[in-house]
Length: 358
Image 1: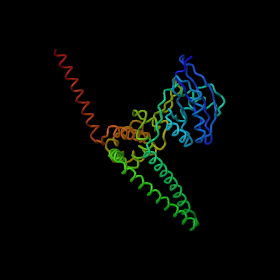
Image 2: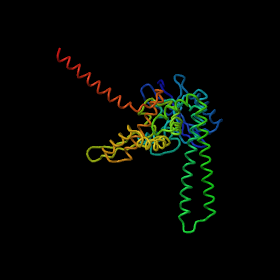
Image 3: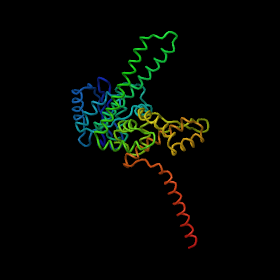
Image 4: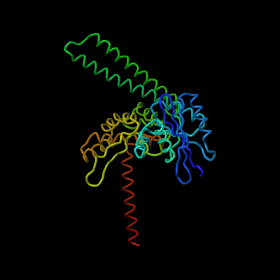
């Protein structure tokens, strides 16, 4: 029987690539044809591609599928794309949830590779494209800054604890304060580097200016969102974006006995969610639109954090819209939209009256 799809599922580890070659046939049945392990290094990449070519049916192309396992998969992913191969990268949570639906009881590297292969055979996956060099660099810088800020918070707590003691150690406080100054200096250096990098690209600079027209959204927030989404390269709509960020709502209900509270899934890019927290609080304080949205949601369910998360999601969606449409924030947009609805309703009533008269 003819194969209509060929997939190689790759379970990536630090030192090895566990590969599973699968086929999907015309009657929608599937088969794991072969398995093999290669080293996670350039010579292993070449051997893996040679093996894939020897196993491939000439009737269709091979799709490589792998999990986003930290940074271990990145070298192989970039190498495959450079060789002109098709590749899809899937979030680990999707694979783990998919494996629960299978009858597999033993979890090993081989069974994981088989599950990734079967997932790739059954689903229509987007092809992965490497991030643009400028977005890759910005992502590295913004994540480094985030780590420095987290380390500075730890040092601040240590300084507070030392000062609160009955007998503070002067030398310890000196070292802690020196460490804090170093961290502040490094953060300033990274922010300056980010600023100059944005200014060096005219198109990116204009996009950041449009995004920062939103109340509460600064240059750093705009850069984080663009870097983490690769300039919204593979984002097709707002719902896909909110799902990628983990802002999508998860709800569990069954009959009358099971009714869980709706909450965001948090199964997505943590950096995006974290980047939207402070801008949302600033927008709630200084923008009448989001202040009204926040008040309305709090009045409905009484939970301030839940309302703040809703504003975070709205801000992220707005950033995407402004970037795609190449427009700036219009504070009167909501009023215009409401006026448009009112005019539309008036026109519809007028048309109805005319029809009745006729």
